[in-house]
Structure formats: structure tokens, C-alpha cells
Figure 1 (tube, rainbow, N blue to C red):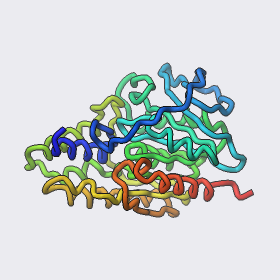
Figure 2 (figure 1 turned 180 degrees about the vertical axis):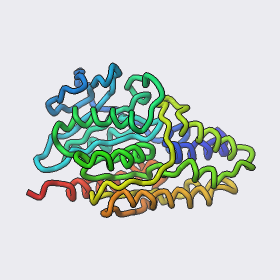
Figure 3 (figure 1 turned 60 degrees about the vertical axis):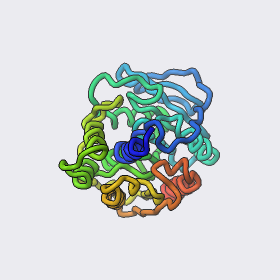
Figure 4 (figure 1 turned 135 degrees about the vertical axis):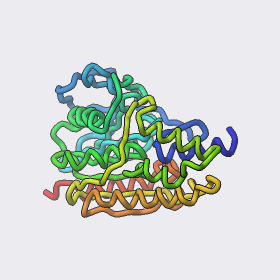
Length: 301
């Protein structure tokens, strides 16, 4: 892969949440051994550990859980970035599972879950998330921790599900205005790799990707006063793109600040030594952030 292609892949990983070859390369951990169990939508399950499947409207959704439920503490649900899956989150899940119940899942069109039956929206992917929460958490509240596109999905989901979502951790989440940000940073007059990158990324946001999930820009809705931690990368990342890199980096940082509006109790911090995959570059930063939010969201009794 050429340097230009590597940079293009890196930006796609950032703005579209896709993990392409050569981007943030790291050994991919394996998920826990399969629990060899399948459950049907609407049928809550007893707490389990390992990898299992649930049926959502006739589609198989792969889920993985670690740790035991802890009375008074929310269940953590991890949401992967686009192009990734629960396998990439396995090490993070295992570490968090030493203290809390933690689960992750492959969205439709990702990992070992079925392909979607048709185009997806944030509403339809939210319906799958609701079923996952019902299956892995029962009646317990949850803290959602999402990376990249998973962070955007979590932050869009929380305001409409304040009865279940008690906290958020947004890990270099895709900007709520990513389409506009990209168009402003790379104008139509651009040529070469930058123009190709812009067009490919906008196509991803229009649903041209295995998840077939179309994501429109929008205002950030409020989820009340739940604890929220927004983590952004601080390493030299987007600035490597000739001519347009600095503008892309500024727009990305501004997108992180926009997510602060999701709660009156939001904080922003920077993982200074990380690229886009903060949970791989500085896993301790992500673990500590999630544990803080879970503790703040826990039942004080």
C-alpha cells in the first residue's frame, strides 16, 4: 500500500469508522469461546459468558459477554466502529469484565452477524441494539461505550432511551456533522486521492457499505444529565494528509466538542499518544473512562 493509500485508509477509518487494511494495524484478539446457544427476540436470557447468538426479526446477531452482573451497577455494552466487530473489542471487554458485566455484539453486516435484510437507518440499527440490551442486561440499566461509528450510534440512541441508558463513553466518535465537515474540509475542486477519499467516505455515509447503514448529519439531542466522557485522539493522525489534513483534524476535534451537548454532565479528554483506535493504543485510558462512568451511574444504595 502506498503512503497516499495508507493515509486515505486512515481517514476512512476515522470519518467512516471503517477499519481497512493497513490502518491502525494490530494483532486481532479472538473472542471468548462460543457458548453455543441461540435465543429468540423477546426472550430474556440468564446471564451468560462467552459468545452466543440472538434472533432479531429473522436475522442472527452475534453477541459476547464477560463478567457477572453486579448489583447496583449498570451493564456495559460496547459498540464497535464500522468495518470492525466484537473481536476487536475482546481484550477491552475481558479487562472490563474483571469488575463488571460487559457485552459487545456484531451489528448486522459486521463480523459474524447476518447481513441486513435491506438498507439500515439509525432507527433500525437502534432496534437491534434494544434487543441486544434486553437479552444481555435484562432489566438492568446500561452504559454504552462506542468507538467511531459505534460512538455516533450510541450518542444518537441514548436521548430516546433514557430509561435504560445511564451513561456514555464516546471513543473518538464520528462527528454528528461528518458529511458537512468532510465537504467543508475537502472541497469539490479537490482532485486526486483527496477527492477520491471524499467521494468514497460520503458513499459510506449513504449506506454503501456491508452494514448498509445510512447516517445523516444532525443536531445533537440531549440525554439529560447522565455522565458522559468524550475521548478524542491526540496523536498525529489526520494532519498527515497533504493540504487538507489540518482542516480535517480541526473539524474532527470540533465534532468531538459537539458531542458534549448530549448531556449536561459531559467531559472531554484527549488520549495524547493515540490514533483513532484509542482502545488499542492506550487501553488503560478507555478502561478508566468506562469504569468512572459506570461508577457515577451506579445506584448509590
